[in-house]
Image (cartoon, rainbow, N blue to C red; front, top):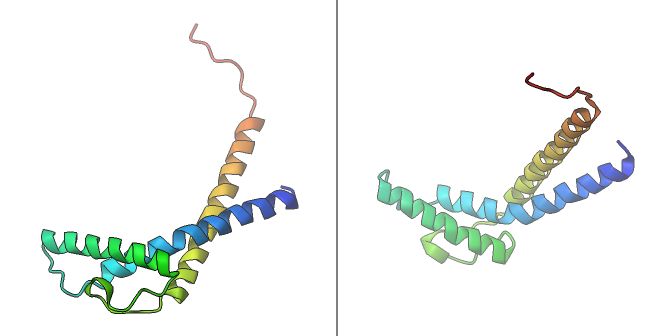
Length: 117
């Protein structure tokens, strides 16, 4: 694989990681940090709602939620957003590389025509 394509794939993976890390980190933090949610179905729906609120807050504030929004506490999530961006970027890069190798081996395989007669 040429170096040019690896840089291109790395750029694609890094941009996807940066874009997806803010909402993912916000949702996971909101889902986990809900202190008033019980262990019933309504508690689960409450966790989902708080996760969605923190998803929006974390995306708009770039990792530092506003003070005491949605009944939660204000934590600096920039470090966790960076870790999440790194993990997502690695997963996307490996997926691209594996897909390209699979596509290349499938194109190089020469199979004769199959017929049922």
